[in-house]
Amino acid sequence: MHDVTIGNLTVSNDRPLLVIAGPCQLESTDHALMIAEQMAAACHKAGAQFIFKGSYDKANRTSLSGKRGLGLDEGLSVLQKVKDTIGCPVLTDIHGADQCETVAQVVDVMQIPAFLCRQTDLLLAAGETGAVINVKKGQFLAPWDMPNVVSKIESTGNKRILLTERGASFGYNTLVADMRSLPIMAKTGYPVVMDATHSVQQPGGQGGSSGGQREFAPVMARAAVSLGIAAVFIETHEAPDTAPSDGPNMIPLDQMPALVSSLMDFDRLAKANPLRV
Image (cartoon, rainbow, N blue to C red; front, side):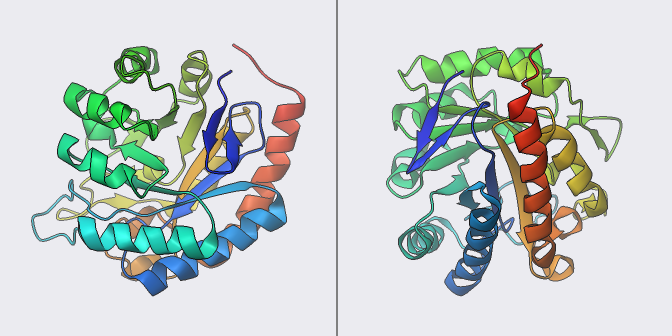
């Protein structure tokens, strides 16, 4: 198993669970700090590692009118404030090769969106920064296809890689999560992440925006963590129904402490009795 160092954290499929959590898109400095502070406290109490996530641009919104976020400059300023104030690593999405060098100056983890996971130029530019790269497996890819993605990043000399499951397309406006993909991707040796909230998304399910079934996100998280994985990715918001994006699948912030606590119980059991396929 590869250990991946992220700030003062060490992440692998054999180490205590990492929680990657935050709002779908960044809204303001105060909003990001509020969520980061509460999540950091909840993770510390439960014994989980924590990374704050927030997107400065949602470049794949369903509708042209969908809110996209703060933009690169303001978004990076917010993420830097979170790092400085809360003291935790931060993660954000990137969408073009030209963004990588700038983003890597601030963030600890650059995330490749699922739709872009085979974009060679983007993967190479991200890898060349030396930052940790979290690749979301495309809704159109099998888990055994991910070594091809890994090899592209490794070709830059960068082996600081995370691999994320976020569900596979299952007919129209529906995703299904195949839990077999987690141990299959773990065969690469790299830390595996379960995206519990996007796996219950209903892409384009509301016509002009995506729907979701947030009540099942904790189910996905608990099922995945019980297998013994490195991390769980969860989007959260204090008022999901009024959030600018992905509200239907985000978990309310006030429910997160109890969820993280329960996930750590599953994590301790799984890591004490490792399952290998």
